[in-house]
Image (cartoon, rainbow, N blue to C red):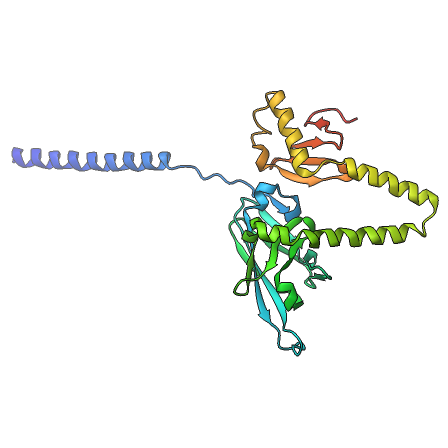
Length: 282
């Protein structure tokens, strides 16, 4: 009888000990499990991204012949786009700001509305451009967003595909120097024609703007000025971010702003002066 009682007590002790161990183990697992942290993903328009971020947005353009158009003399095409966002930001596009620049003319997207592509996401725009002539598919021309600072691809369609990878092809770069020059000349001619009917006051204003424009810094120059300033002042980071991670915003009168994800901004004036967060306004 005594042996039976001792055996029962021993088994009960082992059982309770096992439950305690499991409970302790579960508590450890619960306490050691990582806490999930959330960080707000910033949304930017494409033109405001840094150059390094823009390189992580890949564009592919596909050509399709459009038989609803008159193809008697030469084929007429539509161009659709696929955009892959490999950045850590959500990116916005105004769909009406896509432009196909050809030697003889420009084709403007007739799409409307804002397209948002989340970080890591891929989206397509069907028939972004219409009435693309066959001559415009051979490499003399390029597709841009908003302006020539945002070239997306040259219009060299190989097997009906042109992608942003062709922007580094030296042959296409050389081939399109005239296209870029012609576009600039068209703007200059238009400006000269307009100025011929302006009064002297407007001419002086135009001259002043031209002088300002010629002395303004480019984005890459402003970025280098900011880098040199950071190096000379032993600035390790920009509020915890690297220079390449900052969003670039072009301001008025040739000024540039470089903004981190927390909203802190470093300004570079057209004369190369730096305005850091906390500096007094002048």
